[in-house]
Amino acid sequence: MKIKEENIRLSGMQKARLFSTPFFASLFLPLAILPLSLRAQHKKTADNKTLASAGKVMSYQDSALVKQLFFSALREKTIENYKLATEMFERILQADPANDASMYELANLKRQQNDFAGSEPLLEQAVTLNKDNEWYWAALADSYEKTNTIDKLENVFNQLIRLNPDRSEYYFDKANALNILKRYDDALKVYDQIEKLYGPSDDLLANRQKIYLKQGKVDLAASELEKQIAANPNEIRYYLALGEIYNSNGFSDKALKILQQAEKLDARNGLVHFALADIYRDKKNNEASFNELTQGFAIPDIGIDQKLNIISGYFPKFPDANAKASALELSRILTIAHPGDARAFAIYGDMLIQNAKYKEAKPVLKKSAQLNDQVYNVQEQLVRLELGDNDLDAAIKDGENALSLFPNQAWMNYLVGVAWAQKKDNNKAVGYVKNATSLELQDKELLSLSFSLLGDCYHELKNIKNSDESYDKALTYNPDNAFTLNNYAYYLSLRNEQLEKAATMSAHSNELQPNTASFEDTYAWILFKQKKYAQAKEWMEKALAHDKENSAVKYEHYGDILFFVGNTDAALTNWKKAKGFGEQSPVLDRKINEKKYSE
Image (tube, rainbow, N blue to C red; front, side):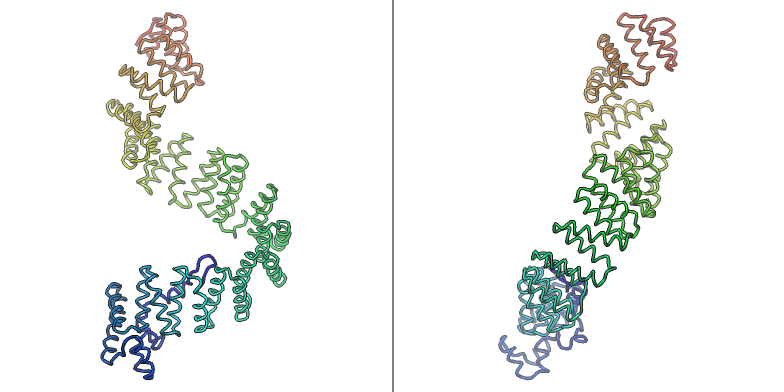
């Protein structure tokens, strides 16, 4: 059994013994588990005093029945019929109250059901009846652990040591129990006893140090390690331990000195670099700290998990530029030290995105996906980058490949739908986006975006009914989606339908996202359709002021508005500008040729 300092736990080997079924256990522990009444047949008559004190002396016939019932109970326990086994052991104890083996078995059944309050008295009685059964004492130790009855453990471990003095775990468990009880000097005496029996060890060293530090005896904790360093000058772990003791107790200069010695001995020890980084950071020497980190990150022998944790420590400092740059550089080094680990490329890609290096992030995330295609988030991030870069073919290829592995991911269906919509294949887009709406019922953002995109696609497919219904549904999930409001309003105005509704939606989109040229153009055009020409002129001039692309459509719309406010010459000038910016249509040509508005 190993009892941890904070929470006592039996060792794996002892637990296996403790909970194993002692079926035919007499092969291993002669007579230890047989009912006491059966053992009485092989003992002197004086042993019957115990039975008599329990209530009666068992007859030969009674003992034979108890024996048969006992093995029947074991059989039921073996086939996991615990209820019947429990009843049988209880019947044995009614007939033979001093049957310690049945007490032990019944206690084990109760412990399996976490009934430690019920099992503990049985075990205490069992060890009273049979003081030399190691299994009983081990089970009682486990029970005291579970019920946090730490003060009774010392005696239990004394008994276990008496029965099995060669088992080192019992000594350590006793010392740790004393440690929990804050009987530090007594625990140290047990560690001295262990060292005499088994010699010095790192476990002993570590346990003594914990006690010394709890007692505030930093000098004693350090001196133990200094002795180890003197005896083993090339063992870096002792330098690291001593550095940790010094640094965590306010002796950073001593810690720095001992770790610098370790660095000279083994410059390729990443843990030394990380420990030095901590000390330099505490001393506010950020440059030296980061230099030690980069050296440690470059060493492949240090596991990637520890390095990932260090990088994640920078996240709370975002969006600080220095923190983002540091995390980026460390993650770059990570890919060099661990070129076969997908996690290194995943976090490097993420840090590139955090630093707005989107083009550089794409191949890095692609590499991560190639190394491990079972991480969905990496693949979604990659497709988002490809869409942002307008690399539609790559987005479709990688997105559809991701869906072959993760077909039920709603966001990926939406993203692939976006790519197909931008390639003007609206039928394929509709298929993927409808998948997204059927797979996701809770994410309002995704549902709003999906139904809005369906509205766009159905409009392009001339399916006006489905288009309007999709826009309306999108707005139920997010009434403040400015792009949905603008697109829906614009398409209504083109059809000259529900202009009041269109005007309300368009005005709201401009409130949500002011100074957006396309939104202002939509609102101006709706006002034009409503014959509110003065207001339309005002909003179109705003749109042109904010337009950075010299939109031909906006200039044509402006010309239309100017014609109706009576400024024909200015209207003609803007129609000609629209043509010069690339607008080609018979209607525009007619306006220019006839110098008047035409639909």
